Length: 338
Image (cartoon, rainbow, N blue to C red; front, side, top):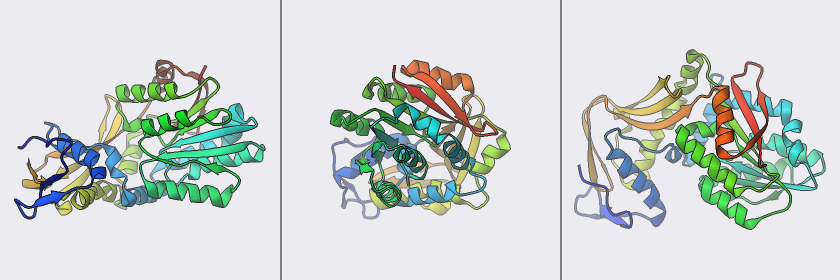
């Protein structure tokens, strides 16, 4: 196996025409670095951040509407029932709602509505790596609450937060990290991220963080490997994206989606499993995959109450309140910067 190339390089061998150069735009370099590094590991893995191109984001929206995909539904139940209590600490003359991984913004809209109803001058600042998702979130706000100021940022979470911190703004901030996005990080990485979030905030700011609770395994399996095949399409879309953007030659039909349960973390995990022995090329670099070999693509950690409290303390937040759905399948934890 060849080692990953110099990250600063911008041209590689074309996989379909060996010896011919393949020019990649500078914007593709982080994706290429992650893929080449991840495929070179003993346990192959590609970060879940790359699942969300325009098509991936659209497929995930379809997934969120499935009857068996409970996280979106139950968290919306929480926000609909408790929106007034959630926004109360920042409902002053003016405030900023920062939406990390905004998606289409349908859940954050519930909180914006309550703030506007209280007469608060609201700035909505969504942060997402998908320009299409940002456009959709902002269009939703324009339609439903046209008086809200919009400051979208197309970036990963931490750079986006630093830009917002440098910009300042009126009033306290309420940072939304919903949908159990924290579950896509290993515990140590999650604590590091929450600590970095805390350092960008000021006294009086708040964060609302969604945590998916441990629940019956049957419900988890239905959510992450649905009978309709949308989670399969979401996972396999990563192969199409690598072919399109990195000049790879994956055959999606030669892979299957696998969803497994790891009771130690605990977490659901998603994999792309090779159905045969094959050679794949990415930007001119070759990787041999054996039949049954898996590429890890996503982790979705599930939490117990003590773990949620530990995250708040470890990151330097004071927990204000924890909101649950009636079955206690999900928790939105409201934290304050003391």
